Amino acid sequence: ATSSTLARHKFGSECFAATFSSSQEEAPKFAASFGDLCTRVWDLNSIIKGSELSAPALEIQNSVELGPVDLKFNSKGDRLALTSIDNSLKLYSIFDQTGDGSTLASTLEIMTQSGQVQPSGPNGDGVKEAPMPWKVSFNPKNEQ
Image (tube, rainbow, N blue to C red; front, side, top):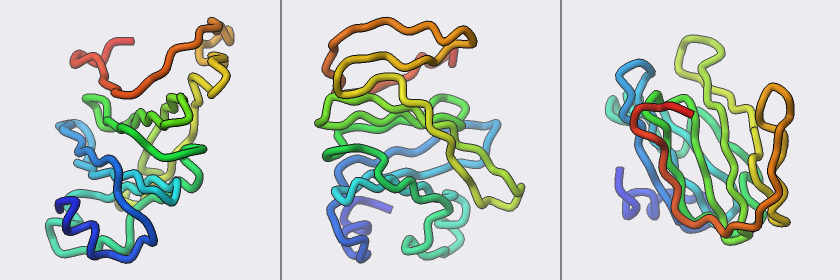
C-alpha cells in the first residue's frame, strides 16, 4: 500500500505521513495520518490478504490539533509516536484487545502545544520545555 493507493480511497483528506511496524513480537501494522486529523492503523497481514483499506482496524479521531507531520512505530510495534504542525508530540499505546486483530489505542500525550510535558512517569514527573518536534524516531533497542 503506497500513498498513491491511499489517495484512491475516499478518506476525505490527504495522507501526510505513513509508517510500518517491523516487530517480530506483534502482528505487523501499517499506520497513516491524514489531513482530517485522523490517524488510521491497519493490520498489515489483513491488507496483504486483500482486506479493504477503507476498513482500518483502528481510527484515532482528532489525533492532532493541526496537520500531522510524522509518525513512527517503536520496535515492538505497540507504540505509535505522532508529531504535528501544532508543535505537539503524542504517543499512543496500540494493543490488540480481542486477539483477533481488532485494536484499540490509549493516548499518552507527552507534550502539548504550550510545551508542557504531561505526566508520563509513575510519579507524574514532567519537565517544562518548548521544543518544536517535527521528525520522530524511537531508540532501536526500545529502551526508554
